[in-house]
Length: 225
Image 1: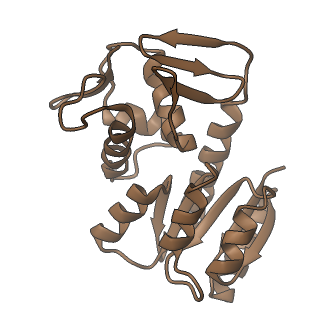
Image 2 (image 1 turned 90 degrees about the vertical axis):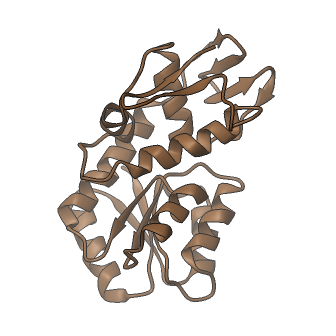
């Protein structure tokens, strides 16, 4: 049974989300400010974090930055902000997804299920494989380049694994959204573009002139070794 940490300062919203997720079979942890949310997120007791942006003590972006220093736990930003810059900033800071208030509880539940399912599908397996300068160690769920460990979020790890299984094959943004994010396209593929930009910054010696994570204009992305 998976545990969801809800970090939100409006009790009515927490109650609504908690009620519906408990009906789906999840255990719930609650935090009403950013400081407590960060503490619980790093406790190792939660499997996914629903993180609001506007919080007392510490805002959601700062909580997320601190989480990403040591943890790859999936984080879905839950926010009333509709500005594109806020969404992009959250994704660039390390959020796996975002959903804007007012939101459909059904859609939120679907996104949570997709992320939990994605994590379950990546259970460690024994052994490792080498792909050019990259080495994938499934037992540790880690990837190195030229012997240097890459500091990846769970989402970034999943993306590289998907590409490594399809060397030099062009993968569309829609396919990445469906196969890696784990749910149907909801109308905004910017999350894919942001994730690919962040990943390129970690993979490439010079992200402006990539040698591995390439873009096929109008078609998608591919990984070459």
